[in-house]
Length: 571
Image 1 (cartoon, rainbow, N blue to C red):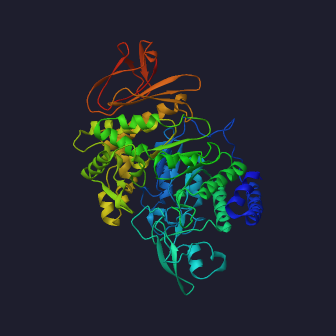
Image 2 (cartoon, rainbow, N blue to C red):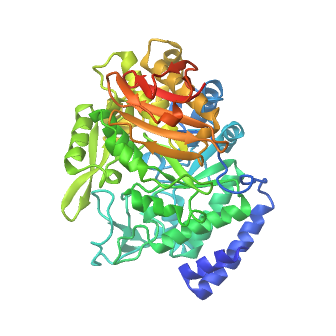
Image 3 (spheres, helix red, strand yellow):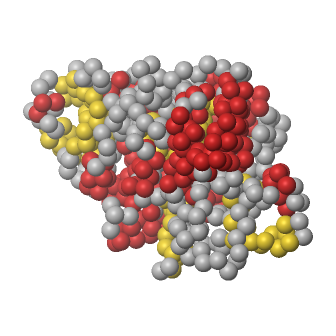
C-alpha cells in the first residue's frame, strides 16, 4: 500500500489508531482487488476523460412509463436518444431513501426497489459512463445504521455525533435555516445528535475509523457494479471539530486524498468529483496540489454568472471571472454545469457580482416564476439558492418559441465551450420549464426543477419540430456532437478568455496539435459586429463547427445574430 495512505490515517486518527486502520484498509482493498475488473487510468496519467465526454444528470425516475421500472425506462430512452450525444449518465442517489429526493439514504448497498435493481444499474453502465453519489456526510434517520444506533447496538455506538445541547456551536457554518442538533431517544436516553441538513439527515462520524472503512467498502462495491465516476456529496461538511466552522477542515481534505489514493490503487480509471457549493476559492481548494484530491470540482460560480450575463445582456462579469481561472492541465479540471437537481447557488457569485447585481438576479428569478431559499447567518437570513428551471430563468416566456430556444442554447454553449467536462441536467437537455405543480405537491422549493416526465408524451414532444422541447434537444445535440468531434474541446486543452466587449462571451480553445477554435456566445438580443484577433482572421473564412456553414468576415470583423453561437475554425 502507498505509504501516503498510512501517513494520512495517522494524521487523522493518531499514530496507533491510524496504523491499525491502515492495516485494516490494506486487507479490505486487497480483497476487493481480487474481484474488481481492471479499470486503467488515462494513458500517460491525468484525467481519464477527453472531448467526447459529457454527462447527463438525472434522477432514476425522471422519465416514467406505466408498468415499467423507471431505470428500464431511462435505459430505453438513453439508447434511443442519447447514444452519440452524451457519453455518461449521472443517476442521482438511487438507494432507498426517506427524504430529500434521495439524499437521505437508508441503505447504501441497495437500489430503490421502486426504480429497479442492481441489474438495471449495470445495464446502463454497460453503455454509458455511469456516475453516482457517495452521500457520505449524512444518512437517513430512518435507515439501518441509525436505527441500530438508537437501539444501542454496540457496533454503531460511535457512528453518529452526540453533543451536549449547551455546547457553543455558533461558529459552525449553517447551510440552511434549520437547527444543527435534534433530540433522539437513544436506547432509553435523550441525546442531541448532529444534523447539518435536516432532522431526517443525521451526520455520520468520520472520527470513527469504522465509518471511514465502511464507506471505502461501499465505494469499491459501487465500482464493482459498474460506476466509473464518484461524486462526493456535501464533502465540505464532513469533519466536525467544535469551535471551528466545520467547513473544509484539514482532515476533510485528507479524507478526500485517501479516497483518491484508494482509487489509484484499486481502480485508477475511476474519476473522483467533489461537490462544494461555496465561494470559488474554497471550491477549488479541493483540487489539492493538482494531483492528490479531486479529479474534478463542480464549477459553482458558472451558473449564477452565466445567468447574470444573459439577464443583463452583459458578459463583462462572466468574462472577468473566467479570465481568472487556472490554466487547463492534464491532472484536474472542472465539472461545468449550469442547472442541477438543486438550484442556482448565490454564494459562489459573491465577490464577482455586487450587492445590487445580486439583488437584481434574485428579483429576476422571482419575476420568472422562481423562488429563493435562505440560510441563517449572524446577520440574519440571506439568499442561498435560487430555485428555478434554468430555461425559464434565462429565456423569458414573452419571446417567440424559436427565440427562446436560441437564447437558452446560447447560455448552454458557454458551459460546453469552456475547459472541463460538461454536466447537463436532464431538464435542460430536454427543454423543460418550471414545475410549479410539483412545488404545490411537496412544499419544497427545489421541486420546481424536478419534474417527472411521461415517456410517451416526452417522445411525442421531442418528435414534433414546432415544440420548444424539440428545438432545445436538437440544438443541444448538435453542439454536443460538434464538441466531441474536435480535440480543442479536450478538458485539458488550451483555453484563452477574450474580452471582445460586453455583448459576447468569447474564448479560444486550442487542441494539443495547435488547432484553434474561436468560440463566440452572444448574450444580447440584437445583431452585433465584433472585432476578433487578427491572427485568427488571416484566412478568408471560417467554418462553424455546429452548423457546418461557412462564416465570412470582413478583415477582423464578424457579424453575429441575436444570441447566436459560433464555434469557428479556419476553413
